[in-house]
Image (cartoon, rainbow, N blue to C red):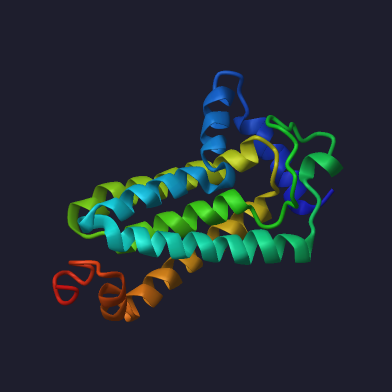
Length: 194
């Protein structure tokens, strides 16, 4: 058994409890197909004050999809832990794609970091930090339900943070041009797009 396979078995032995399982399954399903992040991004795009965060999150989600789900998963082609380690308890349905990296973790951190940097003031302080906490909960849930190795979750989380931050930097660098092109008022805090 691999080192992170052993870690996963130990993790489940410590954390999996009957009373906690329905809550963790609910949290893990929030990340299915990135749906919670897509919905939050769509809501952010509606309001002027949060539109920039929505644009950055959309870019981060697209980047995460391409890098993690279309490229890395298929290049590495790592088997799911429940397929190779009989001690692993799979607590959700069989997953249809490969294990490395965790797409749930990657999209969660890509979107939450993008939103955090795209927001200002109290929105950043409360909504931004709250969404990062949700990203941690979704990443944790992937180990709990037995569908990823710890390395899958770690790499997905770290590359999600990087993708979210790079999306922010890309939009920040080009925000004046985007504000004009997309006719988004206050996209650059009132500097352009009037």
